[in-house]
Image 1: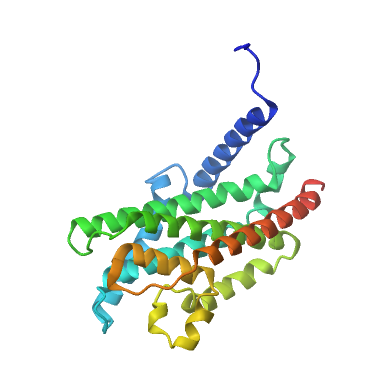
Image 2: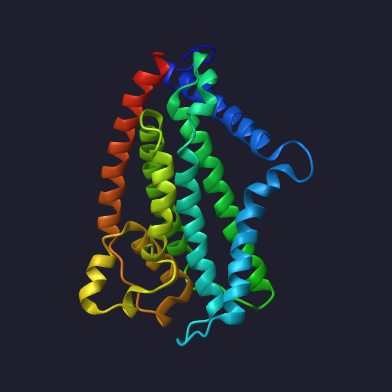
Amino acid sequence: MDRTAPPPDFLRSLAIQTRVIGALVMREIVTRYGRHNIGFMWVFLEPMMFTSGVVAIWSFVHSHTTRLPVIPFIVTGYSTVLLWRNTISRCGNAIEPNRALLHHRNVRVVDLFTARLLLEIAGASISFMTLATLLTLTGLMPPPDDILKMIIAWLLLAWFSMAFGMVVGSLSAVFEPTDRIWHVFSYLFLPLSGAFFLVDWLPERMQNLALLVPSVDCTELLREGFFGRVIHAHYDLFYLVVVNLSLSFVALACVRSVSVTVEGE
């Protein structure tokens, strides 16, 4: 075997696109947060501050009538909101400010989406892990029951958010009001997302309807991973995978369609 032979075209292309996405991520960080002060740290400090504020308010003014401690309940719920809402919202305006970059041969529309998606998911993930760790060390939160379940739930929700984000971003490129419509819809969707209730609390006839919302299934699995047998979680992993796969195919078709239009200009 000739060890000096160049790598296959696929591996070479993969390495190039990885460097492209890395450069786009750095560009996003510098453009959004600047080079001064704490810079990149705002990626996860900002969502952590929001979550901390919500936890503080609920702890002081909310009368929690269940046996569940309010702090971990809100942390596990609001962190999922920041993951799906921020990830999808950032894709809404991903193409227009970066159209000039598409003149570079190796920069594609999917790279613009991927850079923003990775940045938002990384920020939300670091924020959740950091806040949960600090609250656990200070005794305000018990340690999780099953970390593996929590990781699976987080990855499934991130997958859903990435696919949905690409759909919203693609539609925004061809129909400008899409981004504004999504922002309104995200607020209306908030009480239905599963962040502030357990499915088991709902009337039986409403539970199956609630589980049709993918974020509800993910949040239920996340909370089962944290609280363990203290709660009776409801979720359907097969349904989640099917929805995510279907949405991913739709997302890739949308990206392909808008790429032909935008990159051809």
